[in-house]
Amino acid sequence: MQNDVECKDMKVKPTIFVDADACPVKAETLKIAKLFTLAVTFVASYKNMMNEPEGHWVYVDADKEAADLYIINAVKQGDVAITADIGLAGTLLAKRVYVLSPRGKEYTEGNIYNLLDMRYQSAKLRRQGKHTKGPKAFTKEDRNQYTEELIRILSNHAGISDLLSN
Image 1 (cartoon, rainbow, N blue to C red):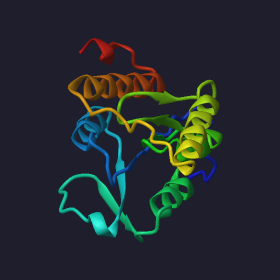
Image 2: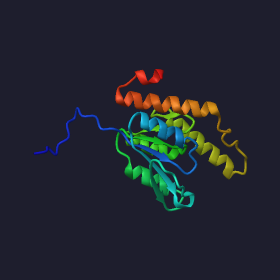
Image 3: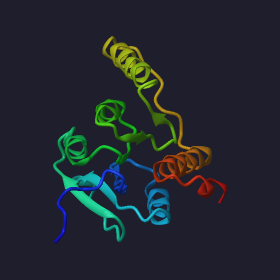
Image 4: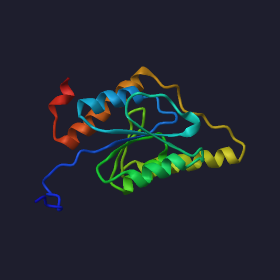
């Protein structure tokens, strides 16, 4: 007879959720997920429907926050989320999810409030008709930083530090 109560010492593998509409690191995410044998769920608007052979793809309405709401409702504590959306990151941190930007910046309790404030100040300036700089171009260094950080987060989660030297 199988016990319905999960052992506290048993590690549950996280799922990686990707806010996929404009994510430039899908291939890297899949490659790293395979290394750790983790599931990846890409969440995108049906307007951006792709014929991707790998990963689990979930398509949501084209509403502005539909992908965010799906991810918020689907994640569980210990999962990993990839997003450039600072507001979504703040919500996910409250659910004890690891959150990483496609540029390799980990969102944490220590930096999220400053990032949210900077986002607010920029939006306030734009409403006043002032132009603010957009994000800089995505670089190879950003891609490398992302790869290193995702491996670090997953290695720490799994308790495996020797994978960092590969």
